[in-house]
Image (cartoon, rainbow, N blue to C red; front, top):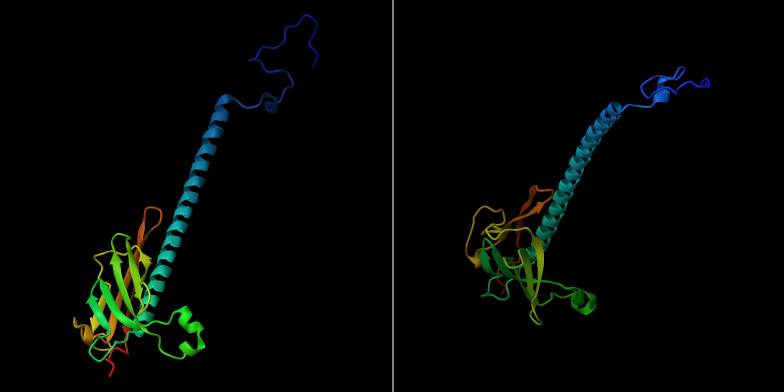
Length: 219
């Protein structure tokens, strides 16, 4: 529309004849309301995403702890099953406390197994010890072979010095407990570990009974 000569242009508060609502844009109030609604939606979506992420982290920590505890219990169980006394007068178990166990066992390492002549024979007895190491904060495994230096590795972290890891039985059914090393015929394991996800601590525990068929002293 062309203004007539000499006519003043319309002021900011007046509607231009023929102009539509869309030509005027949005007001400041409408823009602020839209921004507020968008912010609320973004906060709600963010809260859902954070909650989901925490849940995934907690599940991952729990799954990892379960796997580590089961692996540690499996390693200890395999060693205990081959516990063997060194002689007629020496029992297989040397130390039998709730937090530490030490015994002699027929441990076949990779070097021994690689030699066909040796693989067909029982390897020399190795002294095996499991105990909680407060300095390293882990359940350790120490293998002291008949020849060579002992080797200590961290088997499981997240354990506690106050945990009763081992229970000793004079039978293979886990009925009659004993404190005498020479009388041990089976060992109860209670291995546990704690893992922390997003501020939440979960504990995984594996309990099992391991029979020791070779613990009768050799003739």
